[in-house]
Image 1: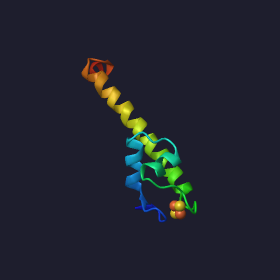
Image 2: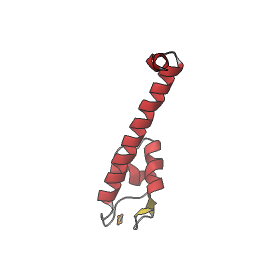
Image 3: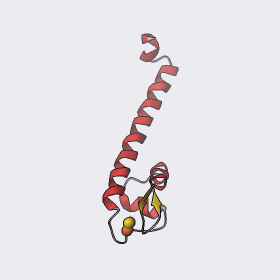
Image 4: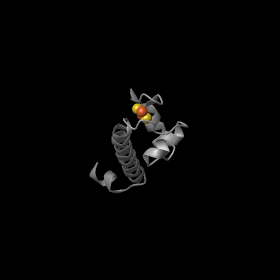
Length: 79
Ligand code: FES
């Protein structure tokens, strides 16, 4: 889905930028080697960026929990 029609920035580009370490809107644009022009997309980019960062944080927490369980952590005791 296109988020920025001026630059052809998509939701996949935003997720790729977050995976590469972007945490701010300008870093998302820079990852695509562009910058906001008209600015109409900025609220959408900010919204998608926040969601992608939340998703990434949740994935890391889940991964850490699984790793803890694999090492005999408290999740194993529950099973
Ligand atoms: S729609 Fe993104 S800069 Fe114009």
